[in-house]
Structures are given as structure tokens and as C-alpha cells.
Length: 98
Image 1 (cartoon, rainbow, N blue to C red):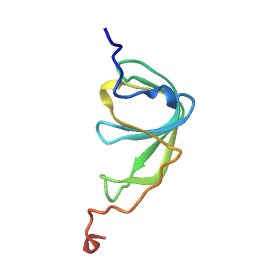
Image 2 (cartoon, rainbow, N blue to C red):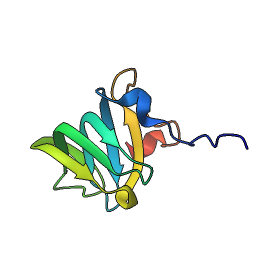
Image 3 (spheres, helix red, strand yellow):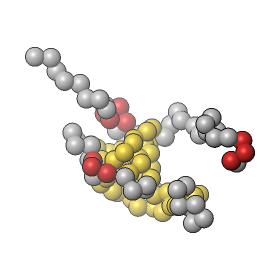
């Protein structure tokens, strides 16, 4: 029987920075220290990006330091590396909307 490959291999992100979006809209960033098959994540040096008070759908520039956290796998929506990524303009947003 062939070994089943995971769709998401987080092993390459251990001890590296990751940004995680959670259900409910919260976003955190920190150093991935561990994970399991249920996608429970252990992160250190974690910061939470606080919501913009004027637009609750966007994250503001304020952060809150959390330290060592465990993110439950059922709440994890997205995991992305912090190095090698950059923010770009939304190509689907009309110029009139900005």
C-alpha cells in the first residue's frame, strides 16, 4: 500500500514564521513550533493583528503580543509563510472603490 501524502506539509515551516487566519476573522503571526494531523498548531512569539475599529472586516496596524499559543485545528482556515511573501494590490477591486 502506498504511503498517503498530506495535502499540507507543515514540516518545512517548523521554526519559521507563519501567518495563520482563523475562523471568526482573527489573524495571528508567529514561529511554528509544532503541529499534528488534526492541524492543531503550536506557535511561539505570536502576535494577533487587531481589527480596524472603522472597518471590522480589515485588520489594522495594531498588534497584541500573545507569546506561546495553541491554535485548534478546527479553527485554522489558512497557513502561509511570512518570508517570501508580499502584499499586492487587489486586481479584482475597481479603481472607483478605493
